Length: 147
Image (cartoon, rainbow, N blue to C red; front, side):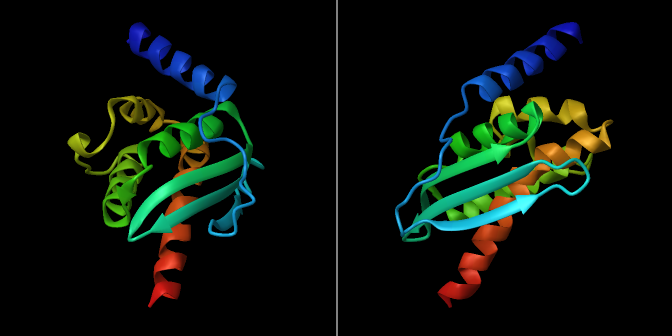
């Protein structure tokens, strides 16, 4: 168990100190959302670019704890050039995992599975889920506008 704790601690620190896809774009083709976790103050501004039902780029900025920042970074590297329908499926599996519900482990990247060790810390689950719920909301809003 200590080895697993070190693995996820190292992964969180790595993505907190060297976040992937961090920074917002001025490209008008991006759609945006900003959300805040009212219980702890974490916030995220998230941008995505969708083309032909595929997420082709994702950018974000966070003012948040290390766990939320790492979650956003890992999320961003897992979803570039992926079909929107697949992304929504993966989001559902990820949110189920961190909420200790049934999920398909094969649908998630190995690094994302480390977040399941936070299920006993509800305050941290909200930090972890903020980027994911924001992406889910942004995609659903985009899908409604597309029809």
